[in-house]
Image 1 (cartoon, rainbow, N blue to C red):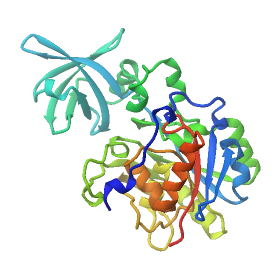
Image 2 (cartoon, helix red, strand yellow; image 1 turned 90 degrees about the vertical axis):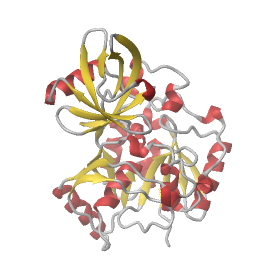
Image 3 (tube, one colour; image 1 turned 90 degrees about the horizontal axis):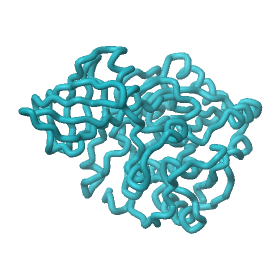
Image 4 (cartoon, rainbow, N blue to C red; image 1 turned 120 degrees about the vertical axis):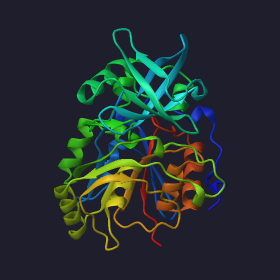
Length: 353
């Protein structure tokens, strides 16, 4: 499909720069396949679901992947910024560098904070600012140092409008975050509070945890003209055997599977088979979902409002229908819903094909 089919006009003032407080006070647009829209709040979610349904959340935790540093070459320094995007082993990371032109293979980079610093060597460099860094620490020491010297990498559409601050340390992490490894938050999960979780459980709605370490693949801009030419970068996903078995039982008992976010949905679909069941999964996934994809396991999707021409808007268009999503987004813009990571949510029903 042509990428331009996923474009729409979004006023700048619709981009949320801070989340709602409390988190579950965010608005939630109910989108039905018959193009009927209902305005609710995320706190109403227990009333929008049925007893026996199952929410599937992503428990990944955002790491301090944004590092400031200096390149040293022949006694000359140059300031750079790195965003770590994939851990290769105990000592090496793939990173996106700005400005990439300042780095060459063999360069030494020192990353630092007010209290501590660490060095890395540029092992490899590819087009688009992607490099492989080998650090001079290993294993847990390196992870701890990265947390000390780095900062959460706020999305560019927020970071370009205001600097990150201490409040973002709390705001840009979900209630469920427990497995370090993401460079961006699974933003649908940002809406959940302890109070909302208790209400869901009291309504006999089950909650299950899976993992997708959100990487650059989720957010890399689509620069091709046709979706068939876009290549998704891989991200690590995990479902344990017991969780898979329990989710299959929910299905067998007539409950619906509600993915909390596109990342949770991508894990479920990566782990499912053509018979509509899932198995345990521990591997990378580069699944790229566009209209025409046959969903095998997910019934409902709670998600935020996404960027024009993004892989995320393509996914929700595959889930609920391209025309439905264009109408829903037009409705949301007209009715002043807040977009992107700190914005409002929508609850989508899968289009029946």
